[in-house]
Image (cartoon, rainbow, N blue to C red):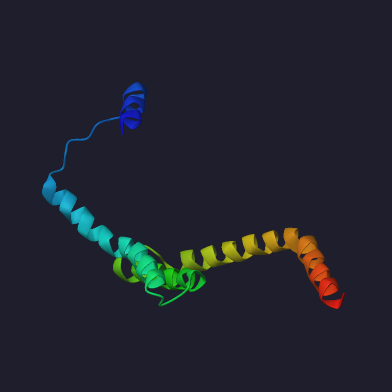
Length: 114
């Protein structure tokens, strides 16, 4: 906190007037559905309801529902653009890892055979 204060003072960041406790409470309440994602993942893994990998899929579905239904910030066009971008990124990464994947599979097969 001290470092942040010193850096903000040196760089001359602006200071806003405190909006009041009512505004702070409203922002906290509006952030609760998004923060519920952390609780959902933590409780689900700790209670043994799902594994860490399954929690990723559940987190995606939960975040998609909260963003589209409650916050109404995600449009279908933006969603499809994001999915296409993620698919392209995954494709590039897998293409780059292709030699290592084939090498590891051949080593695994040879160790089983020998």
